[in-house]
Length: 423
Image 1 (cartoon, rainbow, N blue to C red):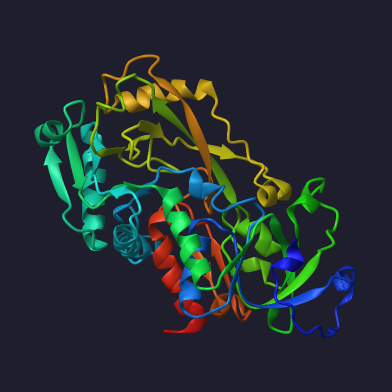
Image 2 (cartoon, rainbow, N blue to C red; image 1 turned 180 degrees about the vertical axis):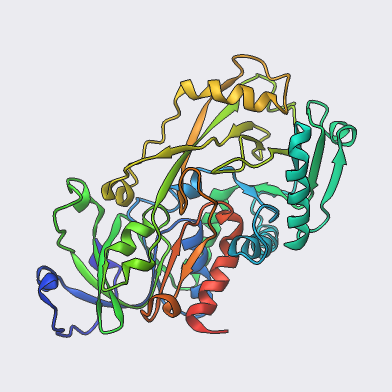
């Protein structure tokens, strides 16, 4: 139950304007730090704040941690090649990669620095490959090297390309083991986790964000429009909105926050297909990650290996229109993989893997990416808003934390802690 995880605070009376009258009767509790969302970034933030001696409460509407984007991705440790210099994505990816490899090594989290080849399959893509090489160098990515076709094919005999960019720093990891470790370390340092607990909005009292909290089951029959009565008003000193897919929707329900600074939300489904050949795990056709030149909305249908040697291809980009608030809060997105989409995969994959046989791909899984740009628009950076932007003390909103969010997670956590605590 909700009441079991909150430290009881002294109840005080506040004058609430008329729109807030329906909240007056909800009980109030105090807290020091509340992290909304138990995905990879929220867990990293909770760990970082708990290491700084803060009393942290993590709330998530799901029954456990990491049920959305954090468990439905490529599980790749990115090097930091793709992103504009000095952007959050570039800085946090490069810094986060180093922190992540060190953390995985120290904690015994399964990972493997297998390297990546970004391939140009036609001469028209070579200028883009050169741009990526130069951008990676600017971002501080180590040991990048351009390969001609013969060098790349010597490394990967099944590969077709005219040129390739080798990134030895890229790798893979077991994201569930990483999250389990972050949860354990945060709990060891006093953090508390409350699952099946939804933050449905908030309001300002003075310069403090008061959170509206209810049990997830309360939302099951919600139509998305009727005003919700919170079970609890939670009054934290620090609030980190790292709720991923619902972060923008939630921020718009923080009454008193300037909605003009909240960017529009877009969502893209990415499907993965698995190579089904009987011997593909024991003898996979590739040993490295293989990526095409990036496409609109993503990094292209690429080759990823998991730590067991299973080969998967994806994700593609399927824009999702008209996402209601209930879908966001309850993670009711459609995660099914349509068999029909495989027809789009074969021609894309055969550009760099021409020996892919008909019928060898089977549906794997799908993930949803929270984006700040829509179809035909330029890709956006991570958006991290603190008091200097929105004027609310102790509140940090994290928006558009898609790829390379996993790689960047520990660096984002460092940044958020410094933003809130100084240093």
